[in-house]
Structure formats: C-alpha cells, structure tokens
Image (cartoon, rainbow, N blue to C red; front, top):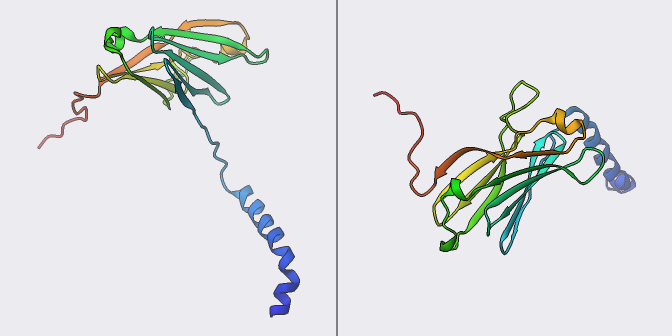
Length: 176
C-alpha cells in the first residue's frame, strides 16, 4: 500500500485540480463586488456600483461640502458622467465648528422599470459627527444616456436622512 501511494503521489495535485474544476462547473457563479473608501486631510473618496459593469467614484470636499460623483466613459475613457450636490444644508453643518465627515457606499437598487431610473445600484451615505446626521444620496442613473456616449451632468438626489444620535425606533408597532 505504501509503495502504491508513493508511486501516484505526483498525481494527487492534478487529481485535486480536476475535481475542483469539475465541481466549479456545477456550482452557481456569484460575482464579487468590492468598494473602496479612503480619506486624506480634507477629502473623502469612495467607489460604488451603478450597474452590472459600471462604477462611480464619489469625492467629498470637507471644506466646502461639495459631493461629486464621476462615472467613467463607456469607450472613450475619461469621465463622461458628473453629478454634484452640496451636503452642508442637508447635514445642518456649521463650518466654524470644525465638522468631521464620514462617507461610505452601499448597494440598494432603486431603479424602476422605465428607461430613466431613479438611481443606480448604489447609495452614498454621508455622515457628519458634530451634528449626528447622515444623509443617503443616489445618482439619477440612466444607462441609455451612458450608452449614447454623450457627456452627462446632473445632480445627486438625497433620498433620506437620519439623526443617528437621537434616532427613534422606526419599526412598525404591533397590536397587543
């Protein structure tokens, strides 16, 4: 038996690989989507998925409150979609109080069945820690405009806000 194992030891990795490839053909393929966030002094940056193969990059200028989303072009390269919004009013920020912003993206598909959807597949959340407020924004994503390769300039849309310091329960109450 020991002699038999030593004779076929070199084939074990190959056999394992073949089994893995065989099983991979029967299992469902689930794509992985990763987002990135970072900050440097007075700027925040994050990425978020808009569609199956399109991603936006979000920039927040902490000195002015300007939120910018840029979408790469379909074929030509560069950025052909620009979306802007100033978050200071929504977050009730007083710039004299040295605000501290946080920004992340998440997945939430608000698109409708029409060609002009309400938003892409991502939401960007901007929070400010001195006020305790956070607001969610979406890009009014229109894939047909993006496919036409024409430059797009539009406004980000706020879709909801919360005071995370004084948040009340929003779950429906049950009857006794």
